[in-house]
Length: 448
Image (cartoon, rainbow, N blue to C red; front, side, top):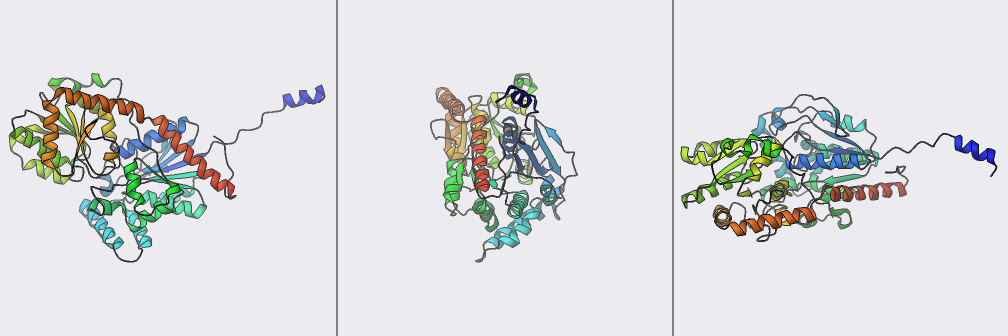
């Protein structure tokens, strides 16, 4: 090669870098909405953006669960932690929450008919919740991968599925499937209707959080080569949680020992059973209170109104509080109680372990895939109030045992639950399904 030619090449402008691949995450809600699924998508979105992906989140403007039936106005789009977030308004449901529950019951009954009712159910799912302009928003985005979340509030998943079908874009689905305490119970029926199973079966990847969720969905004839466990993780506690007023005993709602419940205050989440267990424990002479963090449902409000003034003083809802305040309360709890049959994972279990707080939970949903009974927590059956009370009494009455559970939970958290690991697993699946489409000539493969 001549020196002149070498000089010319050295002076030539560098070739433009290919654009980073674009993943569109579709979720019914997104932080600051207070939910484990929402925090999961938020952490994954930030991790993917940090790994070099272009990330767009398409979601609703809801900031509380009631917005799903009361409606929520439009919210500003923007860049949050390197992630583009598009928030669409929510139309109110006629009849409010009762109307939505009746609509959902009709969907479950329709799915129980002999023929496949997927087409009708996908139309009905547009109201669960009724997010405006999903299809139009997705049509304006040129995605390399679409990843849809949460099959229980599935209007976004349906819109993502249709867009993927129209364009040939590979679709990943993370359903947060709530499979209940046993097969075919009410919670499981809500997550395994014809249209939900169809979207999961036809997705390029079905990415779930635990082996228990994977085994449960496998019973519905999912493609085993498309089904994989990606796991979950928990963010480290805020560095300033000890500065919260909740960290000081005289500012906390309970004086002395208390257990903690975190989640929506509903029957399926086990809030009523947790409260009953603490009442039973107090009748046995144990001076233990229960603090509850989360939004209250009408059934919980009615339940608490029926309690005596003394019982109400021991069953203390704190409402929705900041992450800093939550960790302040959690760090001082004797135990975390999560008696839910509608959790696909239970990130709050990991948050408890981050403070070496022992956990009490139930053999339902994905929880048995997280908690090892007797090793890092205690498991009982769903709605077993006596079992919950006995587990709490054992922890309160045996400090060395409680410390061992909390310590081993903390060790499991450090060993198995890392966002870096989750993000790498998800990226690997994205690359595989993009490569599959590339080999079929459907897309041009970008680099990451």
